[in-house]
Image: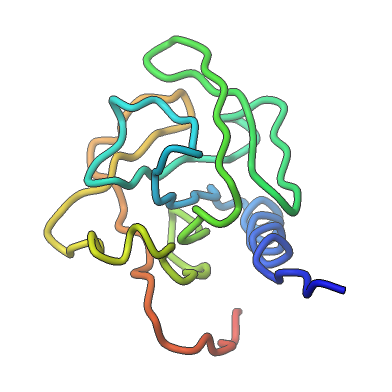
Length: 147
């Protein structure tokens, strides 16, 4: 029997915590040929998406992928993100969340601190100052106390 990944369960847990706490859940995604997102919002092979209930419709977070419909520049688009490409899930307001190991194809193009991520607000429009997602690391994950 193949081992089931904990990643989709952790993504759903952080998403639920964000929405229950009144925060805006964001996901950072390493874009590759399997990810379906508007290419004009991809920056250095990454995109940060607002996945709040107000920003999405038909949101589905299952063990294989995250899919939903959202408006980008007023145009409805279908979004599909394989779970392997999710590099972080966090609350926009305080940055608390969880980062995951960067997929192999992205490790050569690791995110830099001086580059802003493409960030989408609830209406699908870019924010004036996008928050920085937690930086993915290759360190072993540790549990931290959340207030």
